[in-house]
Image 1 (cartoon, rainbow, N blue to C red):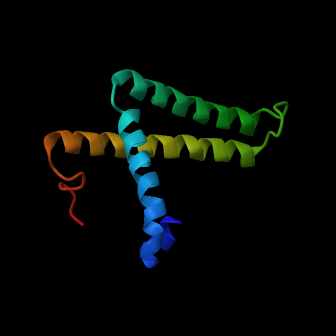
Image 2: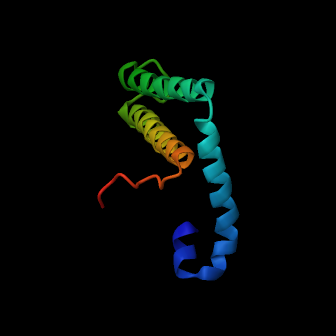
Image 3: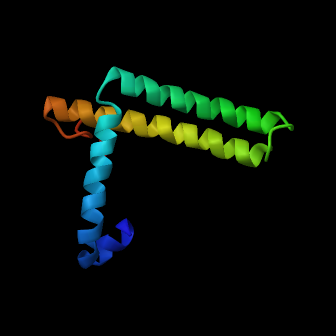
Length: 103
């Protein structure tokens, strides 16, 4: 829907509220040390579960397909946490989030 909203401006009225809520959730995920620590703990659990699912045949639906999807989910979580943290810190400093990057 977000991609279509770029081509069809009428769809933006559906995408805009979701975008606002997603940005608020990203900001809240790193708003305190406890939330950040909890998110990191969840990411580590996803990575560990992925390894377990890949290596232990007794686990239901075991195999590297399930394990890899859990590992990728953990890595995506870490990437989103870093992105959210950079965005929040840039907003506190009053600069755009990617101002220091050459593009």
